Length: 175
Image (tube, rainbow, N blue to C red; front, side, top):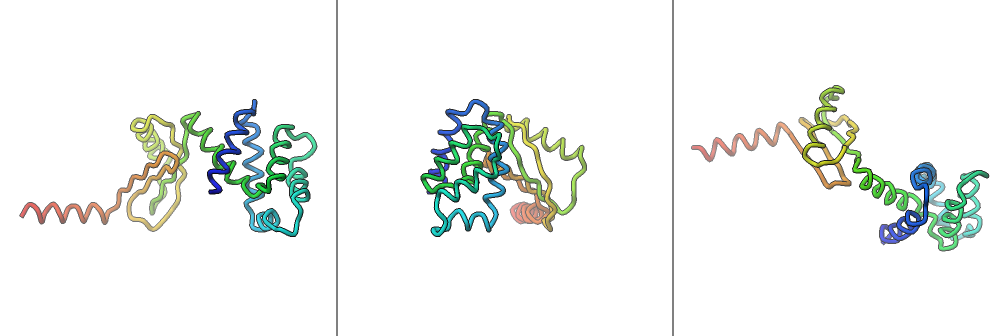
């Protein structure tokens, strides 16, 4: 439900914004702040008035903030939707990635790959998807590699256990 509401606000903002990347940069920071436990609790509290909540968010923007962004925050405040800022930002980031055809993915493995191997993997993914994919590495106890790009719905998994199981199945079928 929240995602549907966030999509409406995101599409409204993107339709009127002239410099969406600049607004998105501010929203990314604001999203991190409003995503914290204390701020989220304050934004959803029925004790604090929506006016105070809006003033709190506007004070973080500062004096020289974009008028469009200020008005957007005021509209969110009037409709008690300030807690949706992280979700709206997520939708806008996803839209920007789709427009730029650049995505972020995660590479999970037991060992860290060197820069050349990572670049080769990114190049191979670009060849098959037609999109530029920037991979971040995460070290796990997984014996093998797992690449996932959530925004494209891609997950590739190479594990020793899976290869071993397939080899055993192949040998069994051969006999």
